[in-house]
Each structure stands twice: as C-alpha cells, then as structure tokens.
Image 1 (cartoon, rainbow, N blue to C red):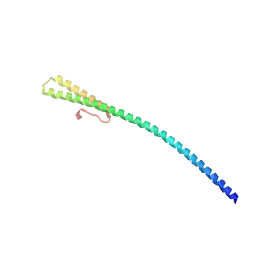
Image 2: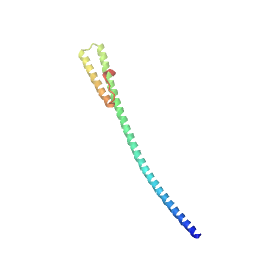
Image 3: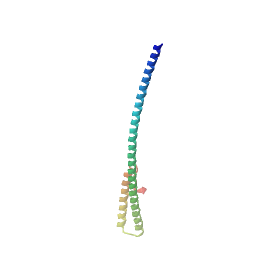
Image 4: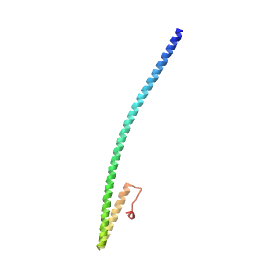
Length: 128
C-alpha cells in the first residue's frame, strides 16, 4: 500500500511538473505575442501619422488649386464684362476679336487646369 501512495505521489509530481512546464511555455508564447502586437501597433500608429500628413498636404494642394481656379474664373468674368461693355460702346472690331481670343485662351487654360484636377471630366466653352 505504501508503494501505491509513492507511485501516486510520483505520478502526481510528474503531472504537476508537466502542467507547470505547459503553463510556462504558454506564458512565454503570450509574452512574445504581446511584444509582437505592441510592435505592430507602433508601426500602425506611424503609418497613421504619415497618412494624416499626406492628407494635410493634399488638402493644401486642393485649396491652392481651388484658389487658382477662382482667380481664373474672376479673370474670365472680367473679360466677359469687357466684351459686354465693348458691345455697348461700339469699339473697334480688332479690340473685340482680341478680347474674344483672350477669352478663348483663358477658357482653354481653365480646361487644362480642370482636366489636371479631375481627368474624368472635361469642360468646354458651351458649359461656361
């Protein structure tokens, strides 16, 4: 009977040591997984910062392009006003042709500018 108890104790000790080894290995795996996730998290945060910076730069570029477009539209409006005034004033035909040429040139520059912003859409003279 004492031999049975010693065998049971030896078996229990062996089972306990095996369980401790398994738990130790599992803890080591979890610690390594946490380290990996911490590193991955840091990388993702860096990528987010870079993307935010890129977005800010693109917003600034869009704002600049919109400002340029507004200035060109203003210039076009001024040229149209000159044409309207020239019609009422009977100015020379050469002045009218020169102004029309300038307006067509401005429209083509605006078309090129808009095409550079959005290649899917074009603008033609009839839409303006």
